[in-house]
Image (cartoon, rainbow, N blue to C red; front, side, top):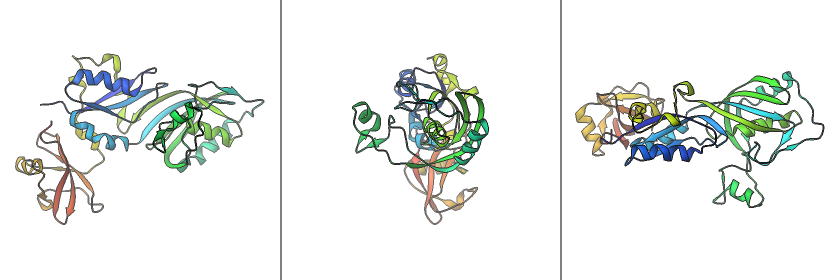
Length: 298
């Protein structure tokens, strides 16, 4: 069988997410690999690498809530909102109190409007914003709605500030530091970032990239079904799996679906061995049709 599953990596600083994936891809060949949720070279922490057919589940991992610990220096700015580019110290910036910062952080929890950094992978007219910025072109990125579930100030010794942030996908942590500082009349640059969790994948259970070798990676491969842990699960028989593998539907009445929130609710179909066989959707009343099949790949 071709490998199919997830490897939870503790990415070090100085390594791009793509470099981490390429290292794993060399080990799992001929299977392919891909990552869910890019970490900049400055950042470290949890990187979920999907292997084999599990690369078709990357979007589900990307939807999972994420948790970060970000460190910032107040009274400074940079074009990238971090220390990747040269920083500029502000003249006589205010020194906000801990209470001011905490009160401002509380106002930034919820659905907020955030403008991504000029040096980001956001596309503008088909080009990456960072490519335009590096070329000296004007970058105008429209604000977008992001979800911040919680933000806690865990350390403050001016000018250094450390935040614990839980948020949804697409949230730029360096932009949070920038906007928090701007709200109290100063600037900020991010100096360090650790992603401590993606969903239920935590850093303390992740494998260091240097420890992932041709001998160890098979034991580190986790079940693909963990990528869709948020979906209701149904157990399907061998005969039902055979139908699904052909792209055919099965009767919804033949399986017990834990909840039915709405039409087009996706459901994870699990085989007798506990492996992900397919992702199903009720396309017609009483009929579950596969939208992704894994029964021949695990």
